[in-house]
Length: 324
Image (cartoon, rainbow, N blue to C red):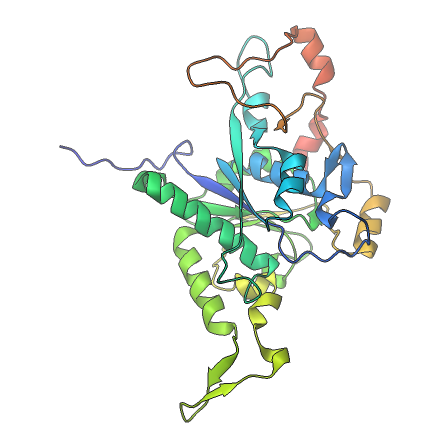
């Protein structure tokens, strides 16, 4: 019997989106979490991050969050998002009818990591670990090839990543975004990818660099650390956690606009800018609806003509040409 070899085509490339909602400070002082702030017309920061993963070509999106935040996050993005690339690049007679759903999963932080190393960046690692475990239990051929990290604290046009899918799904080099010298290597919230092999290296690096309650001195004696030095992994930044990730200058895309909306000053700078993140009038988030049963056709309840679809589904073509 011939051995089954996983194809290296883009269709077989399993890219997993990773988003973290852990240890997000309430800098705006509002009754809701900061990831629910609006960043455009009918779109908030969490929806923008999920849309970025979908535009990049992720086959599934894993959001790491605590149990108390899962209901609010799920109410915002739902269980599925429609793949925007399929909707725009279909050859069907009636455009925008063909749909492919990308599932969204919510995973909690492991109890052994709580209050020890549960930083926002470690939440990305937690999403990748849970996705790897689930896919590995299904089949060894479904293991993720790479992971795409998206941040809710950043704001840039996610639609432009639709034209970057060949770079994002590069099998040799990691993909990452930059803006005026900024990247995840400088601690800024810009998207990037890392491999399954690097996932193990990242975990080993954080376990080695992070502190607990005690440490060994030069005489191999166990001593207790001061309270302020314990559990340093909780405060690790993006560049510290993902230090083992190797990047290459040949697989990078320069952003024309980028805003850090973690603080009020950054959010105000984004509001004052000319950046406009739009959502299509045809809904792509499956917040309340559920997929059709297996073997049935999942068609919209209302049938539109081609002229009506052209009117309700209006995304400016210039927004898709953000990258040069």
